[in-house]
Image (cartoon, rainbow, N blue to C red; front, side, top):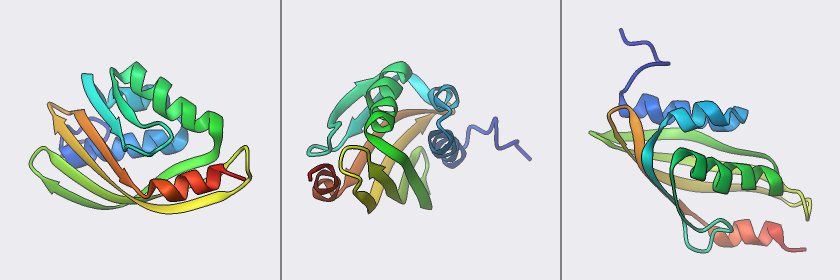
Amino acid sequence: MTDFATSTAPGDVVRRQYLASATGDLEALRATLAPDVEWTEMAGFPLAGTYRTPAGVTANVMEQLAADWDDWIAHDDTYIVDGENVAVLARYTATNKATGKAIDVRVAHHFVVRGGQIVRFEQFVDTAKIREAMTS
């Protein structure tokens, strides 16, 4: 049986990414990402755009979320794995630091995992709910 910590199975790699993100372990999170990763935050999301490289992803997404939100967590609950494709149904919870407003929104993520690393990520979320929490 393969150890979860070193498994290259796409679902395990993605799960390690969520665990690292939830605990703020950016080094462990970067370890799940391919050197040429393409990480896309949805249009309309405050951090909308495509980021490349593990350092680019954590600096432009995770570190920015931590700067603007308290306790930002992606709660992954359902995995659909089809070869190298992993779709995850989840929800975001957090409190915006500027407004004090909390969010609890559903989200879907699509990952492509090759060779034990995430090579592509795309986010789908109700961006209006996120922006609503950011305005007073």
